[in-house]
Image (cartoon, rainbow, N blue to C red; front, side):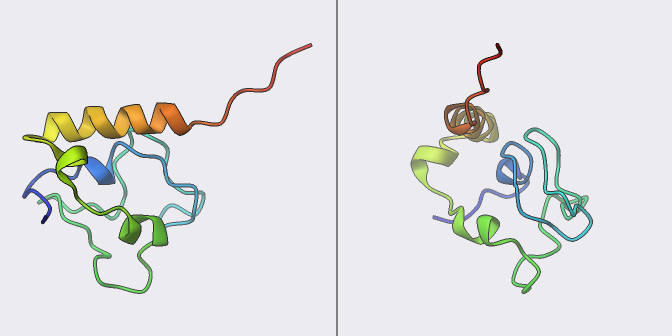
Length: 90
């Protein structure tokens, strides 16, 4: 499967904990990556600077669904399901 044109859900919805050029502390969930171009493409695609996480996230029918909104909802849920638990306060 190939990425849907003008989607960029995977460049916005998930958090990225590793450094990204222009985002040395990574990227919070829901924040567009600074490497996302105006036409919703990755400026680092195919470059060594592209974070491993980004290259590992591959489009799939399950993730991408029929439209961008599905992809954002799916990635938001994945983000919530994999967020580390907050420690209990004493």
